[in-house]
Amino acid sequence: MLRLVIFDLDQTLIDTLPRFHKIFNMALRHFGCQEVGWSEFVDKYRDDTLNDYVCINKREFWDYFLSHYNDLYCEKDRPIEGAYDTLKTLKNLGKNVVIITGRMVPSSEVWKELKRFNMDGFVDYVYTRNDNYCDGRRRTELILEAMKKFNVGPEETVFVGDYWPDMQSGREAGVFTVGVLTGHENEKKLIDNGADAVIESVADLIPLLRERGLIDVLE
Image (cartoon, rainbow, N blue to C red):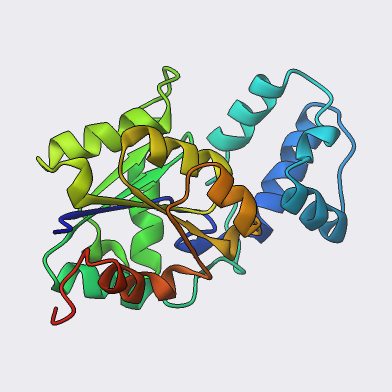
């Protein structure tokens, strides 16, 4: 039976795409690269080709980008529809909830954001790249670390994310891996990279878990 649910953050629980665009352009300016408008940015984001705009070493650029993700307040940030209710339901069912994010910021910054959206009370632990895997450890290792922390096995764990590398990480960790379409990724790519199931958004997670027998239908 399910005991631990691990979520990606951006575009999975919180829609921060407008902020992503702002920070992306800030990073482009910082390194002397050409900025990109919103519509073109969304197309490139969907196609996973934003590196076309990066005019320097890709690792250096994205490390800078991720380390500045919390530098700007964006009033357009909002919870993905259904995220609050899904987290609340999981917590009411006694499930452990963990967030793993690639942002290179202290976990305290993520906790502030969760509090802003009244989600902090439903989350047990947060891993960020800054606090936990700035040394290059992959997200797979963080999933395994979370499982060890809460003393659960792969068969008791679900990982939810929006990006195809997330699906690879879940598959490598051996857990039930769910892709959500709120990150503009297409269903086939998510499945091809390891998703066991794909849903429109986290709003559909609880019904999926009941359907797959991971939580009791009476819970």
